[in-house]
Length: 255
Image (cartoon, rainbow, N blue to C red):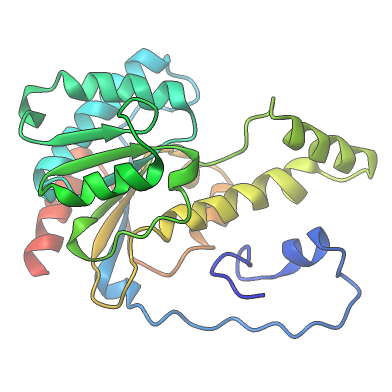
């Protein structure tokens, strides 16, 4: 098997257990990425956004739309915003459509704008100043190399919804075994999805870009470390909006 998302925190343990191969003799090899993430990527974690779990969705999406607007001005669009829920995506989209400073930008949203994921991706690449909002299918499998995509926004850590039948069955199974379902299933699955999302940004050696992670749990919880320890080693910057936006400007000025 070959994939960029076989490990969690640098180990194959979760995959081996999922496949029932814990006792088997397996050759494991982690091959270093050819991409220079330390030079060509930055991870930014805002610390002045309201907590995503405890804030009403209308207020949170309004704040998120304003923040994305400020980033878009610095990056001239070229931004993919990944959501885990359609309702949050749609509310953010409508807030953004009402932003006068985004009138010259093309804003595309999965489930709102017409077309499949592939069609929306092509449309996104056609325009100089474009912002693409996506959910499930945009976390993996899309390829937007070069300057067409310079900024990735991850709105929320991609834990599977608890009312999903498959997720409920997996959690029940682990509880029956006496396992901690969060540690043995929910967390590693979310980490793998997070890695897939992160991988949308740098697609070839000459690519440069910035990742914003708006879910402050990545920084304020113990389990949040698992996400940051599982992605390539890029500089991580935490701070207030003005400081992070200044870093964005400097990053692209250097590039």
